[in-house]
Length: 50
Length: 193
Image 1 (cartoon, one colour):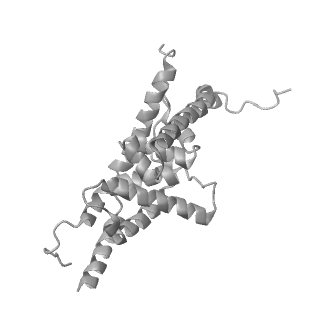
Image 2 (cartoon, each protein chain N blue to C red; image 1 turned 135 degrees about the horizontal axis):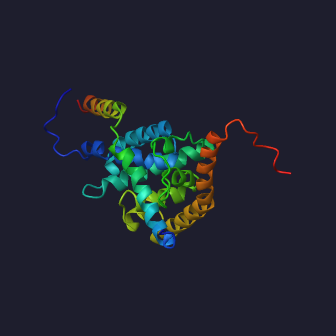
């Protein structure tokens, strides 16, 4: 029974949950559309540079 | 594809390394998966075209986050849609069962988090999750350091309030769910009077 210190540890738990949620997306594979987008942007530039 | 050796360090090559963080930050703003990725896409295009305004050697992530959040707020202003439809995607990234060891249940946390104002969500995420200093967060959001600090504090307080309200309920709810299985078929209503 460790209910008394719930207030202070609540802040820590908030941080922990926040990081967990953030981390999940961080660890996801970035969808292919972004790689395709970056390649497209690069190609456009190379054509302009010619 | 032509590999151009004559352009050595194009800062834009670095953008790809920030995509995961941009997606995570975008999701905390939009609370909706497909909107988050659309937002990241728009921000990447803007960053690409405005790379001239990026100062080499400075924090590119902060620069990208600034573009991302500015895009988010200006889109939102255009849409005049204060109440966003959260599709539960933010919560859907997690499939955890609520914990009963006294720790915050993730589902409760997320339910509370998505209710915060956008400015509080971003402050909390920048400082609490993305590892930005208060100074970097302030710069990213274009406000004073003190403003970020008070937003983080308000956000924390608000989260705790929201979850305190839900804490007892959450336990009862789980009990009710269990009871619902046990007492399935029994008349539940009609005991109010």
